Image 1 (cartoon, rainbow, N blue to C red):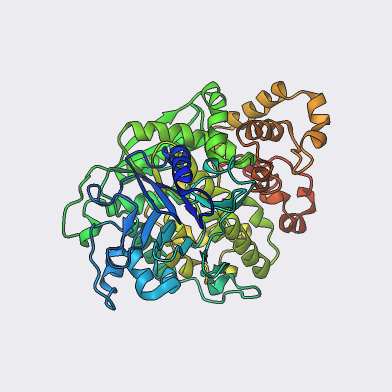
Image 2 (image 1 turned 90 degrees about the vertical axis):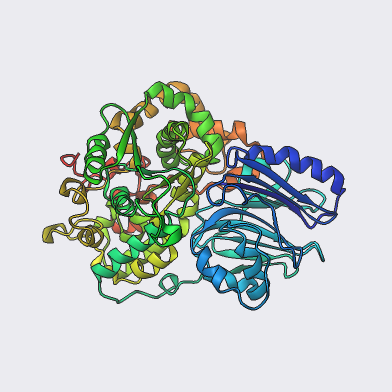
Length: 558
């Protein structure tokens, strides 16, 4: 996963700002350790740190359109780039690479901002036009790839893949919103991603076509196998990552870039799981790996290793959200081992719970309308939680995470299913994510296919969360906790564990606006107004562990 850093709308000294850019972009080099590039003139500076995944030899950025002179820096992957190349018919274009990103330059030239709706991929990018200093910034539909922006005291505009590169330059930092673009000459944010299923008041009514659902996810996974480097599969032991792994394994022998005409460059597929020695997920992940025939690697960590990593994890995640840190720490440790094996891309299962209502509190959803509205709300927040975690803890080690469930074409199918088909009726044998499980009956062992959800931070070992709480209890005094509202008057941490993470975050990011970018409260759904409306007993839950959802989490299904 690459890193971009730009200074646009320059009002200060371009020479001085170029030196600043070269210094600050180094804070993103973990995202792109393979090459560094820069373009600069008196109006704009475009920096890029590259993680080479497609067209290793010729895809270095920034890329320049030899016809218009426009400059492009991208953090992302465009999975339908070959199809898009074929659609460029209005003007002649001199392609310089086989990169999946280069078509963006020419699509913008031919279609303007409307080309964004043609893209199937994950991206955050800047296009700069040196002829007039204008620029175009855009982010993918869900916010799978991160992007931040802000202005310094002179009015120069900074755009960065991560907050850490600009938090000490810009007095106010903001998240560039998912599914939006910004054109400098227009001076306004425009929402380009407007799916019908997300519109207020719309409730889907299509029946659950399990064949279409299955085929759509298969197509999404196949698209995302586009890769010129060794890749791997994350298998947590849950149904989502297991289905993705099973699809990938069935399509791993032939190269998707040539529609299966050529043998894959990396014929042996590797899978990975992480956990403490007693982790509930480990045996299930092993079962899936044996079923699909992958070369499996079980990565164990110790409590002390994980606690020691917390400052680094929080630095890379750029959040103090409790669930994100709990789940991100084991993933951070695992990714380091993955990178050590030469793997540069991994497929993961994020997004399924937000599409199908997989979280345990969805058991209490009262009707199809509220069920769907909560799915839409959860998807709109993913860029602050699971997408942020999956992207940043893997990018910390120069590895790219891909999430097929959030493919825009698959979303169109899955999110237009009548939510009545997604609702949970245990008395009728319909557990959470029933239609997804049914669609892939026979693809993975039944023990996993019909296993109840474990949150990742629980599944790596129940003692992980218990140990974090115990560690925070020792590190944060009762007096400090009693005075938490004075030290942290905004977004006051409700527990000692939350206080610990907030303290570490403040050590890294002293700009007050940095804390504004972290969402309020824990990411447990049971602390949201929606879930409290469904079950008032959840109103005072401060622990975001899935095990805290009493009366729903089945202690017998480990």
